[in-house]
Amino acid sequence: MKIRVNGIDIEFEKKTLKELLDLYRFNPSKIVVEKNGRIIDKEHYATEVLKDGDVLEIARFVGGG
Image (cartoon, rainbow, N blue to C red):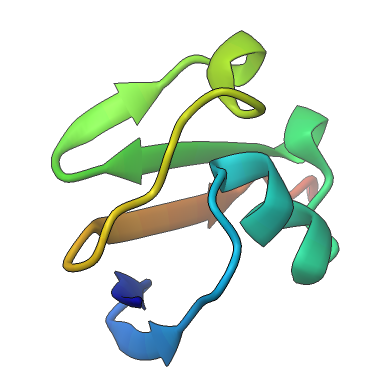
């Protein structure tokens, strides 16, 4: 399937949001994910099914001073 992640079109063959996050080694405790304009709760990452045409925005929390 084709999905868009942070403005980049990618091919993705898995099914869930968690599988995508694992593939790109995102730490779930340090990100927030928006799918098609809706924030996804962290406890739903494993069950959130991705479909062709979905648009994801993944934002990382960054510490600093």
